[in-house]
Image (cartoon, rainbow, N blue to C red):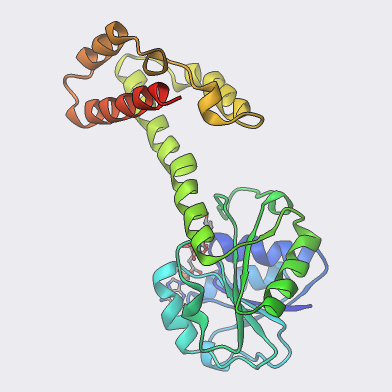
Length: 257
Ligand SMILES: NC(=O)c1ccc[n+]([C@@H]2O[C@H](COP(=O)([O-])OP(=O)(O)OC[C@H]3O[C@@H](n4cnc5c(N)ncnc54)[C@H](OP(=O)(O)O)[C@@H]3O)[C@@H](O)[C@H]2O)c1
């Protein structure tokens, strides 16, 4: 299959290499900043295209738009894809309809943190697949399941929910790791001390519903300990509020089960 990629950031980088290594031909890489685009094009034996208006799409089966969400509309406006080309974006929160000026379009959304400088286990990702019609969805699903078997069909509402859920599971938990990091740092302690517990929690939810493996003072409704913690946090109003909110959330959950 002939694939062209727009973008050379985190997702474009890994998508291009993934498709290439799995035997697809990367025909073109377009990128706003030439240096980034040329670097990726060289890795995947593709032609670098400096201008979107000149992107030759006649032989392209799949065109992947992997630019930041805000720039997708601007990029789409400049495209004149052939009727047979399927144009997709890779965003979790951008409606698929943003591509509706194309004849065949869809979404290939990876619910995973993808960074250019870090190896990404792309074949393990459950890509969320959406197509402009059943036929397009089937084609995209077929392409993706061959190289990433956990890929699955979803609708726009499910994709947005998956995106929000990823923010809770990934971005928010990571922000809380930073709170913990700073708390330890203030006491001259190393974050290394928490790495085993972080690992254990992530391991526990691999085979359990998170609520079933919840521990800690809030899960036990241990008011004495909670008060001691709040006292310790009295000099940091922002973090204290987060602690209070999460604690009351957990206590309520505990009483509802
Ligand atoms: N990274 C993730 O973990 C992740 C996970 C799931 C989904 N996604 C989605 O994947 C898409 C790409 O994300 P990313 O993390 O790869 O972004 P990124 O690393 O920030 O890369 C953004 C790319 O967009 C290009 N770009 C920015 N503004 C542009 C404009 N006005 N016109 C044309 N190109 C422009 C940049 O070009 P320059 O090189 O010129 O800056 C760069 O190639 C987004 O829709 C995002 O929501 C990302």
